[in-house]
Length: 592
Image 1 (cartoon, rainbow, N blue to C red):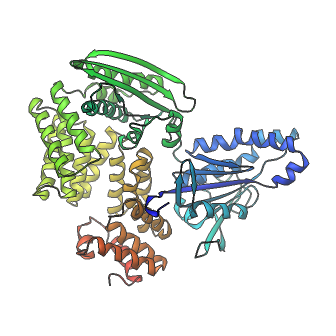
Image 2: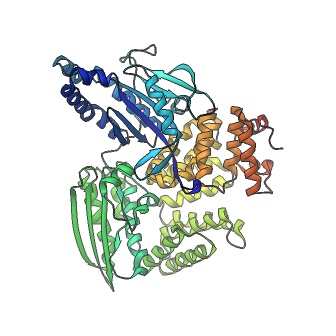
Image 3: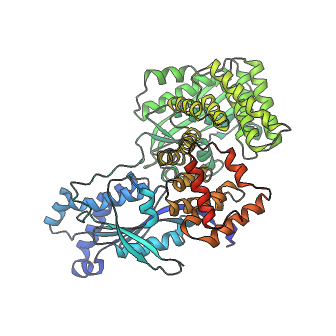
């Protein structure tokens, strides 16, 4: 398999093994198998599910589990190991069941995905750590200990360095045990990380049943509007369009979707549009069992499409037992355009703007559709917001003849959108983004908080809040926001890794920063500033040769790159943050 074709990602890997398994089997094979089955069903599997893990494989008495979040992995391990002291476990022992005690090793690293299996150094190191744990305890790599930081109250103890086969440098390991020196179980409190929320959903793109591929924009648009409406509900976790649309055109098992996206329910359906009539089928499925929670079919005039969307949203809310606040009810009832033709233009423009191909031609076509929608409906707030978003894309990607002017156009259209509807979250997000480019961090923070109050499930807004906290001198506070963006939109995570890596760099957690930034470079090869941050992190770690290699790659991508100019454009509020970046580079003799 060619290196460039490998499917790689950064993951937290947990490896667990039963202590003394061969001895237990020799003494009581049937009892041991029964006890192991009970432990998995009552303790291990529920802990994995509660912390959004995926069991990759079972190997006899051993288990390999993958997590998207290192905090989830560690909290899962702690929950499992602390369960040995629960009343249920004590009852099993009293009844003569063999005691199932695990050793657990955890690593954060690069893994290679092949079908549903994973392998690579990230897995190998976790497997080497597991035997080093005390019975009933946990052993983690230094990058795991560094990554969790103070986000859990359990503290790992430094246990020195080990050498691992095929890994050039030694790995420092850290250990914890419920009965260890770090404190008794009664003194320790595990801070729960985000788990698979009971009210969580992914909306798959509705199938276009119209027999006309040109109608894809319409079926996709209806799906996205349902996502947008559901995202405004604070009591519901909603996966973003980027991630749920990765399943478009694929035959999938909703149970796999639930596991992969970490949700309890999945909405799927189809749309058939014929003239002025539309037929919509929708079914809400329990992602754990595959059973239907709700299903319905709508045969309506096209002008009734908004009533159908509203009904689908409320039926989902009712089925998932989510309570809407009065403000949320009002916002959901007050977001319909007044002109169906304007709505059609809006859907076409949004499809152009958010589609896979993003270039000057798609930008210009999207702008024309949004302008046409506004001609038909001058009060259409969403169209103004998306027009502002299109101009922001141009400002960042430099497509038009005058991309600098697009920043002002983005600001103006965001302002118009807010004038038409102060509750339009995307407009506030665009206003925040524009303010951040103008280094007005206070205004940007104010706008992004409004955006998140209106749509708590917007990954772009969470990531932007994280980046604003970084630039404002609060990198540690940025990490949960960026991780929430990755939780809501895992398919877009490579874009968020840049800011997550920068946050760890500026908090002095150089090993974690380097791992995240390496992954970003691997997945988005053309990036330049990520390579600057990566070279800085490697310089701080003393890995001079690698730092110089990434700097050389940067100069190959952007021969005219100037560090001073680039840092001058960044809205860092604290000089010490800029100094952290430049000092890491200086340790590697960069820039040369």
